[in-house]
Length: 426
Image (cartoon, rainbow, N blue to C red; front, side, top):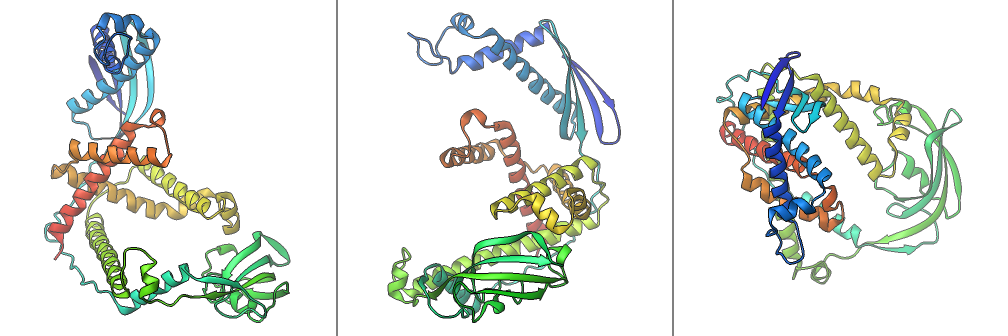
């Protein structure tokens, strides 16, 4: 095997790899052995079929395709290790020659940029004490009560605390807002989950009654297009239900699960809230440390990483909107923005996130912090089992390499953050 490296720019290098007849023969043999481990033939136990019989029974085309894939992945890994390249991304694979006696391919390697991290040994972030307040417990108990509430059809008028279902339309300057129509929209009066003033405007209405009113959207409303604007609402009450909240006592608590009395439930709630607050404090400390290092270091965020981060942010927004029954295109229309507008708006935050990734990578490399094979194997196995049991995927579609890379990166980052927390907090 031979290879050449040609620098394209500060962060990209073109790699050309050439494999000769002997190299290719070796990869074909390795592929046959690997396939033979699971090969079954009548009269032989699994994995015990003689090599000559395996060769006769295997699909030659399938073997060559698998051998080609193995040859490129393995040779690429060997070159990266030999040249000690800190590779961020591999792209633009181009096979220049593929014959029984020679394989030549090219790829573009995007390398992690050189960054200079100032000494952070004297950085000290003070940890804050966390406590569970009575209000925290009361709020959780209120949520539990609401989840076990009883709804009863109600005659009369809408009052605070009632659950209503409404049809509504929203107009701005007599024009219907895109997405401004909803049918049988559920709402708890007083929950403050809608535009300020909307719920109060429904008080005193009766079932089947229709009402038109106007509200001015807050200046900081999340839909910028209508922030601070006068909106006209037409609302019809379809259903009114009173909400009967249960009494929280020992009998009620025993119906929730493994609790004998109210004190046990409260102890469990207190423990859960304390754990959540400790986790938030840990995250705050870690973020303050890493932000200090980023802000005091010389880092250039590569454009490829910025674009990948922005892609990820757009994708996450799309997923969140889908989970709430909304489309990205509709949301952007309401905001009066395009995806390009979002990318420009989020670029600064994306750059910050990229710099954090680069700093974590640099610290891991400088301090030889790695995820062990055992840790990765265990996490990959658990992740695969979970996905299969949930029906999220099947074995044939699993990309184990990508899964291993993602898990390895996650474990390594957690170790780096733990390292920083131990050395830079008090």
